Image (cartoon, rainbow, N blue to C red; front, top):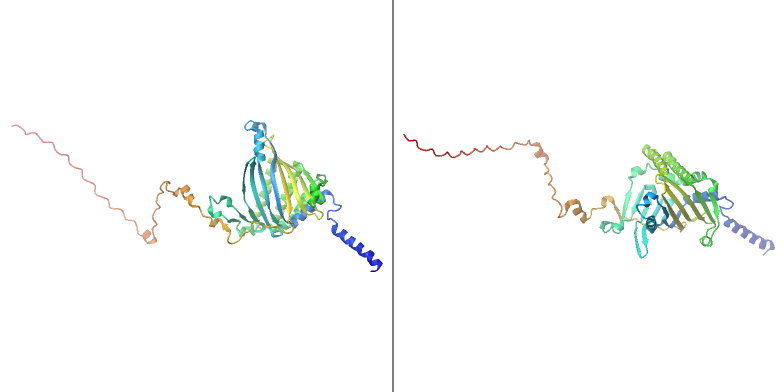
Length: 375
């Protein structure tokens, strides 16, 4: 092998490896890196996720503290958690969510799980309500299908809005102060997960409200742009107004951290959010959310509708026990019989007056015997 070839091959290999290892986030500022990651995630989001949401802190106003022990209320609140797992396939407009509402104390635990599948572009949902099968046996092993009339769906531009999500995200997050984004050091655990960056976003109540407001305004603008329905356009405006009113009543501040790999793939997210009610001074609740993503590019769905396991609301029948509750059981009060139906022929015949019975003659009273007159 010529000397020049022996020198060129390693150099070419090194350049190729260097090119493959180049991160799209290299030399980006924290804000640009965060926005790029979120845009890429919304553009081709296909993964499974696992997460949990719980109350980490709760403060009560003094007037409510006199009604209940604040420490006891905090303990009860912290005993509840909202676990979630599922799958996302945005190119197919499909999201699976399997939430578990859990209450746990030492030696005591109760929970309820409601698996759901959403087809966004047809506004259809399949809900596994098997938790209620003792009351509604027909739900056992079935998925309850809920859908919006398809003639209405045609007026709602779901696919068009979803395609514009990267633009919507870019517009909303670009309005945030660049100083709100910072790179954070990686832990050993972060590196074991394959992370190359940890990006933090800190928002005060004003910035958090602005982010949500711009995001919703951008969505509403696209709904109005892509839909010819005046009703849908009016609904988009009304939704924006309702959210603005809600933001005035509830202030929110947050700290969010994104765990990202070298190719701008979102691996995990952690958020701490504190909510305060403007009309209830002294009240605040802090929520902590943790979520991890896996199976990037190959999400696995567990809620699988088929012709055999789907039940619609029209097919859902009242159980046998319901008749007793509704007043048709043995102990129920009798229901007045309905008037017998009259056919057309009978209805055409004029009603005849019923004959009136002759009045009964009053009985004559017996006459008293008269004494004989004496001449």
